[in-house]
Every structure is written in C-alpha cells, then in structure tokens.
Image 1 (tube, rainbow, N blue to C red):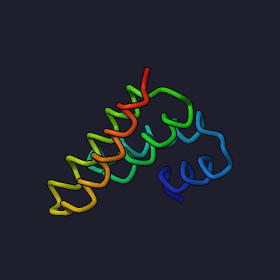
Image 2: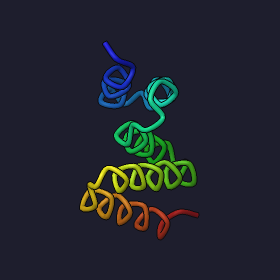
Image 3: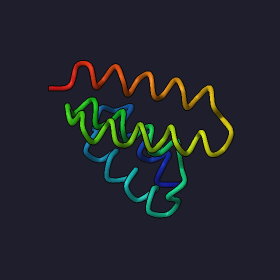
Image 4: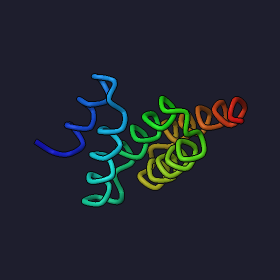
Length: 88
C-alpha cells in the first residue's frame, strides 16, 4: 500500500500528525504529486498551521495547473485565499 493511501487513512481517523508524516514520505517519492500536497495542506489546516497549509495548497494548485487541470487549480487557490483571510 502506498504512503499516500496510508496518509489518507490517518487523515480520516483524525490523526493529522501521522498523516503529515506519510504525506511527507509520499511527496519525497513523487515530488509532483499534486494530490499529496493538497491533502497535506488539509491536514495542516486541521492542526491550525495555516502558513504551511497555504504553501502546500499553492504548490498543489501549481502542479495541477502544469498538468492542464486549470479548474482544479482555481478551486484550490480559492481555498487558499479563504484560509489567508482567517489566518492569524
């Protein structure tokens, strides 16, 4: 089973620290995995680490844009902007 799917399971269980550790490993294996950056960003939001969340979401959006998935990139940037508006 890939680290990405293990991380998703940890996220669903609410263990965001373990999820982030596995997303880190998934990203180290595939630095162009837009989904892993997006999910790790979500885990950071749940932990209240908004700056890391924003960085991951923007990286994810850029990777989706490079793949030609513009609509997804735009949606992710909108989420990132919402987080920026609430981040301390």
